[in-house]
Amino acid sequence: MAASTSIVPVAVTAAVAPVLSTNGDFSDLREIKKQLLLIAGLTRERGLLHSSKWSAELAFSLPALPLAELQPPPPITEEDAQDMDAYTLAKAYFDVKEYDRAAHFLHGCNSKKAYFLYMYSRYLSGEKKKDDETVDSLGPLEKGQVKNEALRELRVELSKKHQARELDGFGLYLYGVVLRKLDLVKEAIDVFVEATHVLPLHWGAWLELCNLITDKEMLKFLSLPDTWMKEFFLAHIYTELQLIEEALQKYQNLIDVGFSKSSYIVSQIAVAYHNIRDIDKALSIFNELRKQDPYRIENMDTFSNLLYVRSMKSELSYLAHNLCEIDKYRVETCCVIGNYYSLRSQHEKAALYFQRALKLNPRYLGAWTLMGHEYMEMKNTSAAIQAYRHAIEVNKRDYRAWYGLGQTYEILKMPFYCLYYYRRAHQLRPNDSRMLVALGECYEKLNQLVEAKKCYWRAYAVGDVEKMALVKLAKLHEQLTESEQAAQCYIKYIQDIYSCGEIVEHLEESTAFRYLAQYYFKCKLWDEASTCAQKCCAFNDTREEGKALLRQILQLRNQGETSTTEFLLGVQMFTVRKEK
Image (cartoon, rainbow, N blue to C red; front, side, top):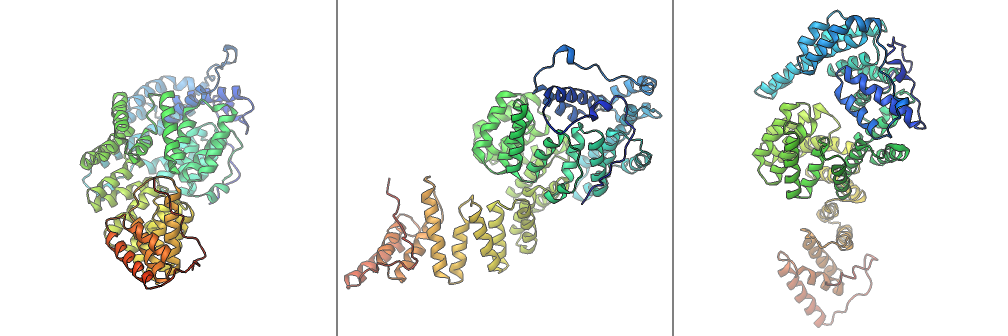
């Protein structure tokens, strides 16, 4: 999908013009800090608080400017002066979320700033009413029917302004948001690209564009401005697209040029390591971030996911209590508490807190996915499916929701549905062994054994997280009476377990030794068969079989059978790990 390459010039106010002179490098950090402080003020005046906060945090990470270099506020235009009273009153109403009231007093204003706040107030009013109805609705059917009634009117008005080239960078941003909400994705992408050219320093436009890019190919066709902001955008989109190596390289470059104190960059690096399941590294970075910015709430739900995976109950409890003291009505706080109750197997309470998070923000992706997991734990498959579907509506790149849907349909014994969802999850995470193993199991159930074998081998090749791919592949070879290939897989499995240096209980270890003992016995490799049979005796489920096989080997040896010295596989089976 290509965005238009020629950007239509638009009328820009004198207040916004200075921020357009951005270049593509980081050679002058003082100039970058001035630009960040300016855009932080401009976005704050228009009620774009998240963009303002992002710019202010980034500016804070750079060295302070001397008094002589601090810029005065942008000059007030004639139109600004005429609308000043109405804007000041409306902004006060806007700040206390009285959006209809703010829009009422801004109606008829001509200045760019007042007009944006007028349109933005109408948009937020519609969103607030939609969210209230969504929370009050009884079931999934009603939720799907709740719409922001203001969107179509806003689109008509903004479209006219756009055609007349009367929208500034902020107006283009809002027009893009309206188009996205109406599912006009291609048009929205074009408008957001235009917004980044007209006002490159507005992070909100970059972030909205990021949410619409589904793969690296789409990214290549975008005609983006050559500005240093593009580097932050690329790092963010690489993280979202699971291109973690590229993302980490971008963030390292940003740290090297002078943003080493940015808590935003540190948190993004932690999220990137979380996405590739480097749990120790991610935990370490999050702990450092907590020391650097102890009252930070953003991304703490991701931190709690890591603590959950590691079953760190006391640390998760401390985090939940700490965030409650800071702000117990933040969606991230509710998710952290939900994870805490989930770790304690109190799934009803966990689901309740995820529901609270969604009442605060119905478009919060993490809460939908986590709630789906809790419904799965409670065996409520229909509610789980609904939660996962909502997660995908919010973000089609959420592989956890696709994977969760696959698991749900697996429980419902619907393998064709299951296959579709696992494929989608695998497309998003091509190097995640869990997706490949799940796909392999699905192909097995559908009797597509060749495809299943490919999936299991690929899962092993990319680094099998759960150490199960080889066993499943071996059992498949066993089922197809491919005894030599099955033995090879079991050998690799045992070698991998012993080479990792961890003493971990592997449930299939006894299965591997039992098969290998029988395999070597059939091949008349008595020494190897005896070694594997002795190993079988260490496990409850194979002890008797191991003893019986050892007796048979002893009998055959006593009858004068000699051990074959060559290995059929051309591989020395073991120097078995020395007993510690």
